[in-house]
Amino acid sequence: MRILAVDDEEDYRIIIKDVLESAGYEVRLAPDGEAGLAAAKDFNPEAVLVDWMMPKMDGEHFVQALRREEPLKSVPIIMLTVKQTADDELEALHFGVDDFIVKPFQASDLVARIKAVVRRARA
Image 1 (spheres, rainbow, N blue to C red):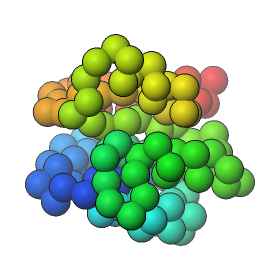
Image 2: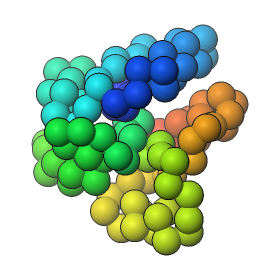
Image 3: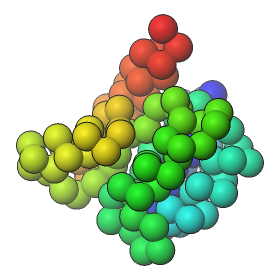
Image 4: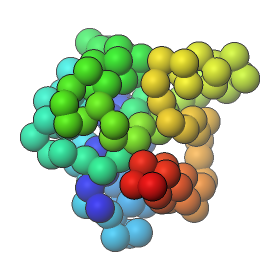
């Protein structure tokens, strides 16, 4: 399964890549929303992980842009962020994410949530 991870923090990109490759996923990384959108068009991911607060194009604008792209508009998106209030989660769900994970995250939680959003998308 192909996963795109978009995060401006290199440490998180490395952690995500290590966790997901260990779980058998093919992973593409992008350092910001603009690069992430270009990578999504090229890589055709089955799920996307995106940070909320990034330079150039933040997570909210990335999600909105991806949701306008055929055939990517239905790709499941999980928001990874340090924002952690219920209002933050609700806001992210309103602008189009499918799930929400607060950083730092547990590797097992990340893998389980990816499986869940992809399963729902395929149903």
